Length: 264
Ligand SMILES: Nc1ncnc2c1ncn2[C@@H]1O[C@H](COP(=O)(O)OP(=O)(O)OP(=O)(O)O)[C@@H](O)[C@H]1O
Ligand SMILES: [Mg+2]
Image 1 (tube, helix red, strand yellow):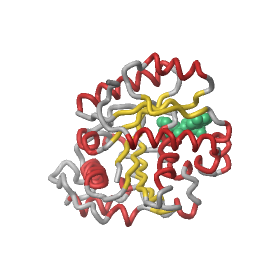
Image 2: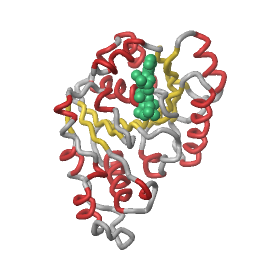
Image 3: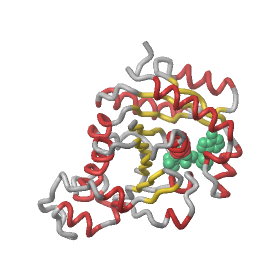
Image 4: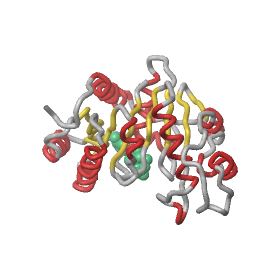
C-alpha cells in the first residue's frame, strides 16, 4: 500500500522510472495503480501497454460531462459555483485500463487558460489524486509533470515517498534542489534521489557531490536497450535485465527506509 510520487526535470526519465517501479512492485503479486499526471501522457507506451488496451483509457480531464455532473458546474458556465469535493471513488475503475497487473489512469491536460485555475477540472483532478493517495488500498505510482510548481499540499502530504529523478547536468540538479526545497516546505519527509542515465563513475560522483545532503536511492545505467524499447513498443521492464536489477535495488532501498529528507 505504498504511494510513491516521481518528479524531476523534463526528460530525465520520470516516466521510465515510474514504469520500472510499477512493474517491480507487481512482482509480489499485488496490483499497482499507475497514474500518468503529465498532460502529455507517455506512461502507457513506456509500460508497453498494447495499443488496444491503451485506447480504453480515458483522460479524466476530457470527461467534460462527467466533470460537470460531479462538480455541479454547467459546461461553459464555469466561474459559477461548483463543488470542491466531487465524488470520484468510482472513477479510477471506469476510466483506466489494466495490463499485467498494472492499472493505468491518465489525468489529461487542462487546456489554455484553465491551467492552474480554481475551476471544476482542477477540482476534479485534486479530488481524484487525493482519493487515490488517501483512500485506495493499493500501491500507487504517480508520474508527475516536469518541474516543481505542480506539487500541491494535498499530494505532498499523502505520498509515502517522493523520488526525484536526476541526470548528470546542472539543470536537472537545479530542478531537484527546487523540488527538495518545496517539498521540505510542504512537509514531505521521505524524499529520494535516483540518478538516471549513468554512463560512468564520474556521473555518479558529479550527482552525489552536487546533492551532498540528500539521500540517494541508487543509480540506473544509461541503456541503449531502454532507448530501443521505446522504438519497438516494448516495456522498459522487458528491455534490459541489468536495468531492472538496478531498479529492484532502488525499490528495496526506498521501501526499507523511511525517515527524513536529509542524510543523518
Ligand atoms: N537510463 C536510460 N538510458 C537511456 N535512455 C533513457 C534512460 N532513461 C530514460 N531514457 C530516455 O530518455 C527519454 C526521456 O525519458 P522519460 O520520458 O522517461 O523522461 P521524463 O522525465 O518522463 O520526460 P518528460 O518530462 O517529457 O515527461 C526517453 O527517450 C527515454 O527512453
Ligand atoms: Mg514523462
